[in-house]
Length: 149
Image 1 (cartoon, rainbow, N blue to C red):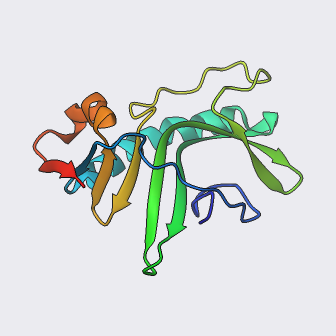
Image 2 (cartoon, helix red, strand yellow):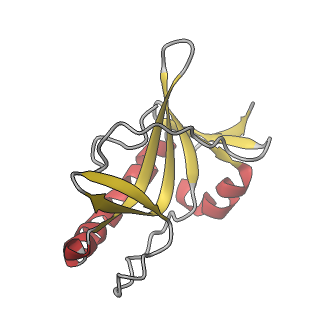
């Protein structure tokens, strides 16, 4: 497992355990990854602009946090968490600073339409908690989905 994806500024190979969706109720959305990628692509530009604006503070804001977990069968499972993830620079390393905007930063961050969503990626499909599915259901209109066991 690696705490950050290849696009993250975090260095140092820190490890972390992914959080499984909290309930026993899960939904698989077939081809749901495409939808989330399209939304994320639209969010990236405002985040890039915001990071340019706050660059002298020593902080960086990511819209998606990824955790990779190696499974016993050799496959890698990817967990994605959407929201606002703050990182701060310490020397040459980037350290996770939390979800709350640091006091040092005066400018509010951009909105994130997927804030609070947690998913597991299975190829082009996504698995999410039933409560998250209900919250973000509008994005998955027209896609096939079913209960995941």
